Image (tube, rainbow, N blue to C red; front, side):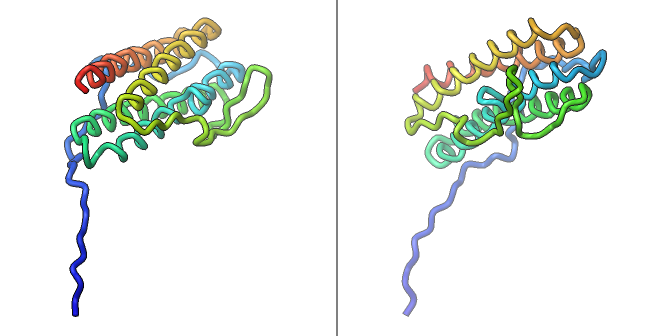
Length: 182
């Protein structure tokens, strides 16, 4: 005797999702000279509490939890995550060029090292709170990038950071629009 088994599936198709980013090219990824202090600063943007690693992971987690019930929003969240992956890659290249270690360890100004963990994430249950947490994280990232740009005296690095900020500001606009829709 065969028993009937109900199955569930996720019908949200992600085939045509592309990174959500400003239609403006990134500057060449280069540095004037190796500089460990700059590499350490960028390690925090790469994998600190407020970082591209945190953003990617938080967005992917939200997208997974939304994809069955809120497919259009999940697609937008995935597109933002894809742009954050490009940011992570750009930062990793800069850290390497600066002579730093591309790892999941953020080096604080005190010299203390902190390995990235999921404890860096804000994972609310409700959609509205997810979007608000994402907006707060994007705002914090912009503020951190700007603070780092004031400390970094290499216009090549700052040009890349400035271009990343353009995407982060665009993400806030998209997230705010999604928030206004619900």
